[in-house]
Image (cartoon, rainbow, N blue to C red; front, side, top):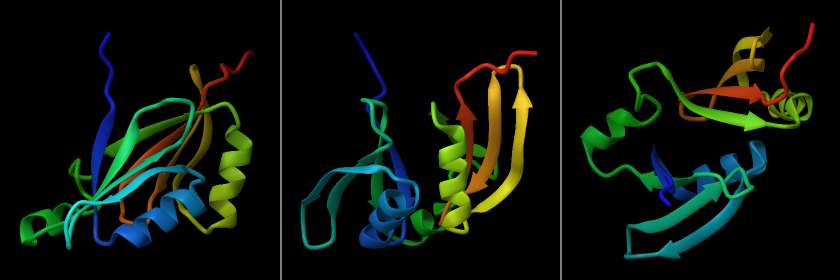
Length: 131
């Protein structure tokens, strides 16, 4: 069995990133371990055993340039949910920028939002909309 375990997300500050992903998006802090004076191993997860984000603090100008633009402006991460309306309301309550409002698609409801760093995310309601 193989699975994708972690995706590195380049951030500017560990604590700021933890606060955003846990406080605003409602992710769970899985691990926060100090590796050296300047490096930590920080994992957050939306839950349910899914792939975890490794919050990796940028080191140097090249990595700093990648913050918020790891995919050249395309949607970077796809968050599936069984509680679309609740998650949407949470985004609105925290003043998260909604780039594309919710719309019905053949595979469910979807919206695009921008995280604190500028990364684009799809929030996808897993339920299929029936006519």
